[in-house]
Image (cartoon, rainbow, N blue to C red; front, side, top):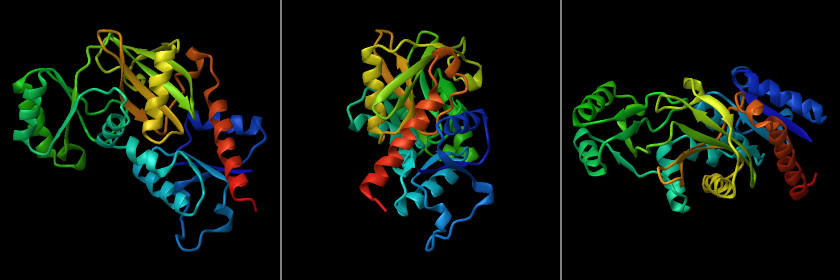
Length: 289
């Protein structure tokens, strides 16, 4: 069993994953994308791994590298298709809706005029997000028409890809927190409550993590959301509607967990490594040497 861990920076998460690989006696290599190149037509023999775990900070670098390994027939966790869906909020929303998984209403527009029409139809407040991005950056809670006009003008003037597509999501009046669950394969292994006085509750933005008991309903919708985007190792962001029902906000394909192992008491990196090894073993069974 040969496992590769792709990375562009060694964070706490990667150190914890390496520790579990060593605890389980798994033969692994760390591949720093800053120090590696790929010959697409002639893959180097040393790159013929049984399975590759992707842990890159850069979405674009992750996508390029996952595509290469998948085209070579090497399984990756997660698969290129999963990263493509999760890395774009429009793709994620469409995948969830197509699978029948409850998710907030979303409208997409390409101009100021149509975006304002969409927001008026949805009703204030709404949440505006970039189509791509993470860590709760560049989110805006739009309270009224004047605010909408100002934010859209800024986005259209800035002109980058992140601002040229206007993504507007229904605002969920959550109870001062949201939920992040962790799904590995077909199992919701644990979850955290992320609490904050601010409406953005990401731990990267100061949200406080505590353990979230996983009931059957939460486990079911979390696994359904993970399957909707293609499955694997995923973090699912869940919102609670005022009536107590769950709705899926986003799904993350290169999940961070440094703030989650202690409050949940679950060894998340061990679960991840065990799943990666399982995928590698399945590949060896399907294509024995």
